[in-house]
Length: 419
Image (cartoon, rainbow, N blue to C red; front, side, top):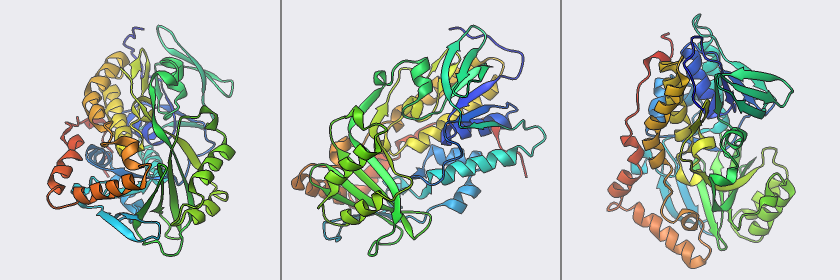
């Protein structure tokens, strides 16, 4: 549907109060636009898996003035070590390998802490007399939307309704906004062949501090422990290769049963991980999937982050795409706030080269990450040793730094106010 220029400050609704949604909200408020952010959860979600900043996303964080807060919450994670069933080291990959663009990046922070850094920045920006702030509504989500010629009418779960000039879906892999505005998830989602789970647990004795420890089992199963902000706890990580099973969605008992069957008797610390799983308060489980779309905008609706271009954890670029996408989307809206249609066209054109590169999966995909046989596991370890050799390091560094070549635009109107 064709949109038309407006004369008033645009009314913007952002569905999703995670990293992408809050980054868009922060930049819009700095540009004098007061967005409304709705989040299904009753409050900001703490903790979560570690995410990283690398390449253009680090530049975005610097331009947005987020780095001091990020540094305060940065994890002391020094790299990744692969072990065998007895816990003996097989291969080690320091974080500074490949120019800091390896599996563990130079800057790692929990998802919840990065989100809190953004929320703190939103609150600080609101102290500027020219900043209109952000209208947050927790425990709320979109029930339905209808695009009209002059606005998008939105029905909320609470029973409230509203009219907006722009609706931005920042509501993740299973985006409701995408389903309502673009079509069923199945049109855009590709299952990559595995499920992933993580949760917080007490750090077991014998785990090397500050290092992410990974263990591969036959059957396409990988278990790991990752350093947390508190040294007394770690994040358990489990990946299980299996056929897609829609019945697993939202069935926590079935999800945990799959993990139990996969890890029981598997060696290393799998028993300790299983003992902790039942007591975990932040148990997370979802499919490894990739979202690819021909376009991220339709009329007055735009998608940002995983909702529009999820690369899956395999890409290692999820947070990068969320931050860079949010920065570009907000910057283009701020450039022409009275012509949202033109802003959304520029958003797609500007971001597409970055996303096309960032969404690329490593060679072998899930099969390479989680081999099914012992021979495959040994071959995968040998491949890692080769990649970390002096001969291959320069080539791997170039391959893993391809997104660094992206020409990130600047949006002066959306910079933080000088202190």
